[in-house]
Amino acid sequence: YHSQVKGPTYDLRADEVARKRKMLYDEEIVLKKFSGRKLAILKRRHIGDRCDHCWDPNTMTVTSSNCRYCYSTGFKDPYYDPFITYGARLPEQKEVDEIGHDHGNEVDYTKYQILDYPTVTPQDLVVDLESNDRYKVDRIEQTEIRRFTVHQELVTTKLSRTSVEYKYPIQNDLFGLPLSV
Image (cartoon, rainbow, N blue to C red):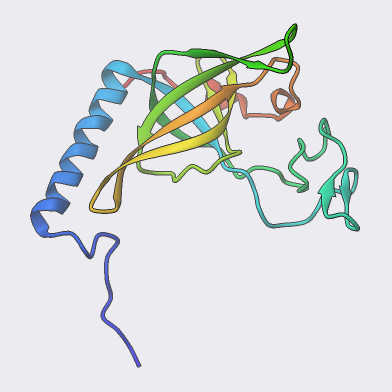
């Protein structure tokens, strides 16, 4: 048995494929030249060798939330190589999570709008290469044409400078990349 080879947009008509490509092309120009910031997206691993220091094979959980070897992911090599892209940073939102009557924990939510690739998932890291601010992705909202992604809006939480993720090494040559085209 065999089936016909189908491309990634096989359900779209030719005019819809052309519209999608035009939208992505225009958005890429706007992000590179006007409103975009250079970002490194660190995709979190979900398979691989487990951390020897904090992974408990009996309970199948991470036992340390500040493990300096796996950065609390449970894997020896916690993230894939950074993917460099541009993203538009939307206005920051501050929200207070109330624990009780006297206490409140202020959380900064930041939205980034990026193109359709790479496909970002929750728990991935976004690094703003201009300021070295690091964000953990909480939620992804996608804009689609007939179920095919055109762009993604990432709802992220800014990590505190004491978070273990700031110790994850990023190559110095990434910070030296020109910030504009």
